[in-house]
Amino acid sequence: MNILEQHNLIDDNTLAVDCVCNQYAAINSLSDLEALPKNIKITEMLVLGSGSNFLFTQDLPRFVAHIKPRKYITQVDNLVVAWAGTVWHDLVMWSVNRGLGGIENLALIPGLVGAAPFQNIGAYGVEIKDVLVWVEVYNWQTGLYHRLSSKECMFSYRHSVFKYHEQPWIISRVALDLRNNSDINISYQPLSDYFEETGKEVTYANVAAAVTQIRQSKLPDPEQLPNAGSFFKNPVLNDQQIRRIQRRHKDLPLFPTTSDQPEAYKTSAAWLLEQCGFKGFREGDAGFYDKHALVLVNHGRASGKELLKLANQAKRMVKNKFGVVLEEEVRVM
Ligand SMILES: Cc1cc2nc3c(=O)[nH]c(=O)nc-3n(C[C@H](O)[C@H](O)[C@H](O)COP(=O)(O)OP(=O)(O)OC[C@H]3O[C@@H](n4cnc5c(N)ncnc54)[C@H](O)[C@@H]3O)c2cc1C
Image (cartoon, rainbow, N blue to C red; front, side):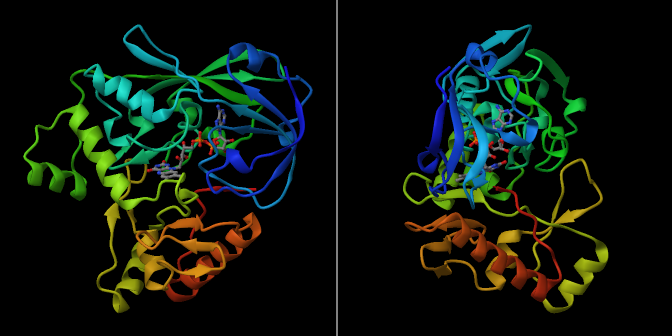
């Protein structure tokens, strides 16, 4: 295994910030995983996929195991099994092109398959937990593999066991139950509008194409404008908070949470930020995207610290104006 010292991750995170890690190894296969040194402590390791959900604010005194993109998908016992390095969108397209449904609403989410269970990726009313059957993890300290069932993954909104408890685990493979008779969910307004306006047939492939088109019109491509997608989670509000905010803001957007909290409502973090004037706001090279206030962007050479300073400023303003504490979706280190 080729271990690099003092490697700069600027090309390995979609916010394109400078960050030097102590040690770095590229992981292309299971045998690369198995070659990792066994004596690395949990707090000294960092598993990196395509770096689309990180904000690095300082150099990392860590060993970075960098899963590199490499497509490997098979069908085993009616399950679709993908290697952690498979690009997520490639897995979506592989599935819909074979007439298999279940993840078409998750088209074009950046990143690799191995990271998808970590925060239970979701979009347009669907989360990976809806179809996930098991996750295989490699324990770099023991050299053993384990399988976790969906239940053991403890999924909830942008959350999983992988976030709750740090373990010496690297996700190596993911198995999904994708079927040719899965229900299609176009309940989200932009999707239902798309099919009404275009009159297209509602198929898995057409839903993936629609989601791709809608996302491209709303979100900046990290290659063109470095970003990490939604910087904050959509906050869940209790009845009291809703009533208090609605006294001044009758137009407060509310939508049901996913099944883990059926009685609760989420609001739009983008709307809260917009009300505080952050849509398109810029300080030096750090800014919020002008078409979507939830997306923190790097207009050039902003450092991780500058981006974090702006994010914290926005967080404070939202807290002062609405009494709502925003929680980061992106992993800040
Ligand atoms: C433009 C844009 C739009 C986005 N839209 C969405 C969206 O709609 N929905 C959504 O849920 N997310 C969205 N994201 C966030 C991001 O795409 C997802 O979180 C994605 O799963 C991250 O994949 P990655 O390979 O880049 O992981 P990284 O950013 O490299 O890592 C993310 C986390 O997963 C861990 N991790 C990565 N690989 C492994 C592994 N093999 N084993 C164990 N841990 C691992 C890392 O340690 C880290 O904590 C968006 C991001 C961008 C830039």
